[in-house]
Amino acid sequence: MNLEIKNGCFGYSKQKMILNHINFCAESGDLVAILGPNGAGKTTLLRCMLGFLKWHSGETLLNHKNLNQIPIKKLWKQIAYVPQAKNFNSASKAEEAILLGRNAYLGMFSQPKQSDLKLVHEIMEKLNILYLAPKSCSEMSGGELQMVLIARALIAEPKILVLDEPESNLDFRNQLIILETMSELARQGMTCIFNTHYPDHALRRSNKALLLQKNGTCQFGNTSEIITSEKIQEAFQVKTVIQKIKNQNQVYYSILPLELAESNKLSTGGNNLC
Amino acid sequence: MNQTKQMQTFTFVWKIILIIIPIIFAFFALCIGRISYSVSDIWNVLVSKITNSNLEIDKQISMIIWNIRLPRIFMAMLVGAGLSVAGCAFQSLFSNPLATPDTLGVASGTSFGAALALLLGCNLIGVQAIAFVFGILAVILTWLSSVGKSSSGLSSVVLAGIMIGSLFSALISLVKFTADTESQLPAITYWLMGSLSSAGFSSLQIGAPCIIITVLLLYLIRWQLNILPLGEDEARSLGSNIQLLRIITILCATAMTASSVAMCGQVGWIGLLIPHICRMLFGNNHRALIPACISFGASFLVIVDTMARSISASEIPISVLTAVIGAPFFIILMRKTGGWKI
Image 1 (tube, each protein chain N blue to C red):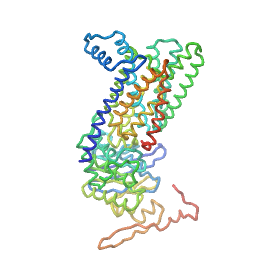
Image 2 (image 1 turned 45 degrees about the vertical axis):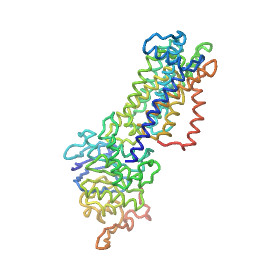
Image 3 (image 1 turned 135 degrees about the vertical axis):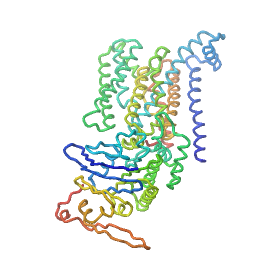
């Protein structure tokens, strides 16, 4: 399964493009991180990619076929989307919320069957969240809710999983659970694409990375080539150093922010919060 | 596996309860009234009418039960179920617990139509028809005023609904102001407070099919309704045609409300009360919620209407009773269950 963006451009008004000439390609088993400063358009990029917003020019291709030409039920059996957990405000039980993920397989007038409910329990067991089944989504912690949303996406048995900031607002144990789940899914051959605020997570987990710049252009390639001190400084206006950490014969990379880049120093009064 | 089994028995027992409750209440409502009849009288009348056999039955008993009480109870059940389902659908659609069948201005528009028709001296069927047309007109106006250059989604629809609703409320006041204080004004005021006294098989012919079809449609897509409270992107990512779902929901809920209000005036409260009670008992899953709203809504209005026509010599307006009975019941339940969230 192959997802590709060809020369995608998008802007909320025609005068100002937010995304300029985005090119991107993900294959089965890829774990792709999308990085960029606040306001660069990471979420917009995901929404365009999935067809929620229309590209101004350019297109998204799923297996070399334009995404907009694929019937919705067929499309959403192959791609699943995990929205940001903070926007979720349903008070239904976890079980029922996850069951909604089967919608792509059901017609307008049909009801989910016993086998669908069994599938819900299987997925929950696989993700170690079976204990959440009778709990209401409105009473869950951020980490629990994120796992429920991932379960809802997985129950559609997709080939591609797209996650919008899945590990934001979580403590580092829960971040680790989410990231480990994504790594495992990628190992099993699923394509995972996720937005993140943490270059560290991209370095550690993803094999490909897409770095969005403030002007809407992007760089895409292998993570080791994209997440470098120079490129990160260009995008975030932050000086960083990438460290190698050895622990029990394993090498880990970590990125440490040092200070704001020269032109953006706090003392000069020239910094912009976005 | 154990869990799924428990769920099944739970819903199975409830299904039977939900079917039986309205039937029992309807049967007892047939007995009660200015003249009370025994259960066996009712049974004999119903059996003889349905099987067309000629049992020895008093003509008068048969007349009262078959031509007066039965259509009225039938109408109460339909209107109760319709308004409850409409309220439930609007609350889910707008993710707002305060949404009622009147959110889009339907009830105000319908009421204005009825008041206008009464002012013009139309007959019963005319009042119903004009009321219904104005109800639909109000929703169309709401829809048109919310679809601007840059539509900002459902909240602008709600705002437009409130505006159109208040516009029609003002027009109702105008109609009342110009009405003849001796004959027309009492008729309009009485009608606005809601009453099922006009019920007969002929007046059911217009509204009943409309309510039955729309309730049935929402019942059939009840599982899909679970998608309504989700965000737009989220709903689309589940492979659902969210626009179509929203339009079907709005059309059905509007048609139900307009027919209900056209038949028996403003029956307040039910659209808020019953869905909330059902959500407290069954949670937010529409697979249970829609059948529960139908059953409880029908039962509730049958009870309230029976009281309205039998407590005192003159009939009590129905929206007075729905509030007087409903509000305390609602508050007790809310304190017990801790309320609910959408």
